[in-house]
Length: 120
Image 1 (spheres, rainbow, N blue to C red):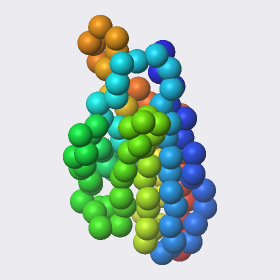
Image 2: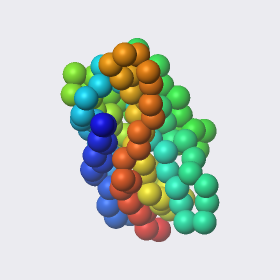
Image 3: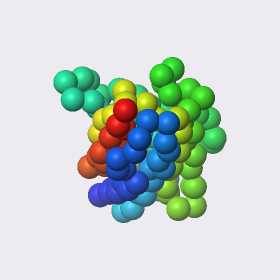
Image 4: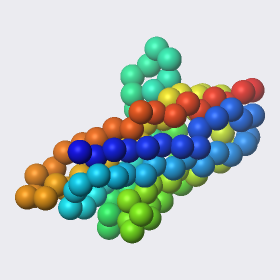
């Protein structure tokens, strides 16, 4: 089993910054892609940013230039540095990981979510 534990959410004023962390633990061979999605009230879950084990990254247009995703592969941890936050960034942020299991099969896992609230 794989567990993803997120931390770092909270309440911040518009223009402020937050840093989210997500650590993966459990029994697996490696982690391919790690990243973040978010879901605002009444809206569908949407991609925020992804990072592969090789260092490639992908961002939603709405966060480009403001958010930075990074990984510490040795610690199986992914980070999301969020700067210049806007009220529309308010959402529950979910960590996700595409894990390579022993034997070669792959599976996607999700964290429990962390609330980010940006006040105007």
